[in-house]
Every structure is written in structure tokens, then in C-alpha cells.
Length: 172
Image (cartoon, rainbow, N blue to C red; front, side):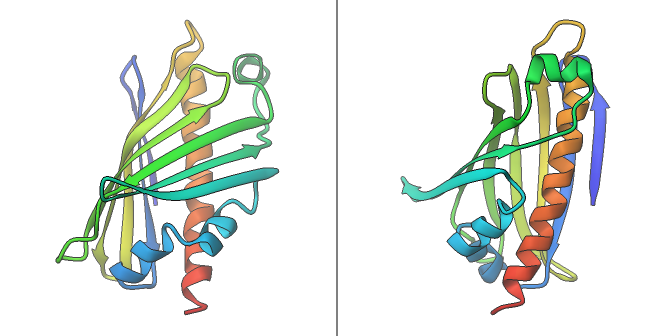
């Protein structure tokens, strides 16, 4: 399901895959559904989300506060709890059942960002959504360590989102 990639000295690669027991249209609809977004954010201390359309793209903006058990070294730079801000910009589903989105995740008040893409496509179990990206933390000497901590937290979030998505799909 996940892969913490190589530390390239300037950022850390990250990839993950979520598999859903639904067809591409159902999963594409789910990604911006208010009930799914509420399930997705359920483990956060607090959250809010919006869905808008901008020049034909579906823009999903999520802000959530999460309490993470950080090592002392990271807590000093990142703070706790973390306010995670996420923006997904989805293009329309194409005739092959595929859709692509850009993804940006920032940590409020910290020089940390995840940037990448999401690709929704048909797969053996129904529909998969693949995340590929980079985690960048601009903190001298400790940035690489903080990048790995954030990459691990993204992996936990992805696993929860996969579970929430399959729960949502089971109600159709």
C-alpha cells in the first residue's frame, strides 16, 4: 500500500495506493462527497472542508488538526498538534475511467509541504487512487528527519482514507 522513498537530500519521495471496491465513477464522486469527507476527517481533533469548481476542476480543500506523537526534536520545529491543510485539484473523469489531481499538503506555521499528484484508475479490485509526491521540510540539519516523520503520518492518513472510502462505498 505504501512506500517511503529515497531521501534525495532536498526532499523525500512518497508513494501510496488506495484501493476501493467501487467503479471509477463512484470513487470519483466519493472523493468530493461531504459524507465521505466527514468520514475521512473523523480522526482529526477538528476539521473543515470545502468543495468548489474552478475552471472545470473540482477543488477540494481540507483543514484538519491532528495530534501526533512527535519526537522532541520534531516537536520543536513542527509543533503539536499539527494543523494540516490539503488541497486537491481534480480534472474530470475521462472516458477510460481515469482522473488526475494535483495535491498540496502544508503544515500551518511550519516550513513543511507535501506536493504531488493523485491518479484515479480502474484496477482489479475496482478503482485505485495512487499518490506520488515529495515531502519537503526546510529546516537546516533536521529537515530530513522531519520529512520522514511527515511521510509516515501521510501513510497513516492514506490508510484511514482507504478504510473510510470503502465504508462509504458499502452504503451505495
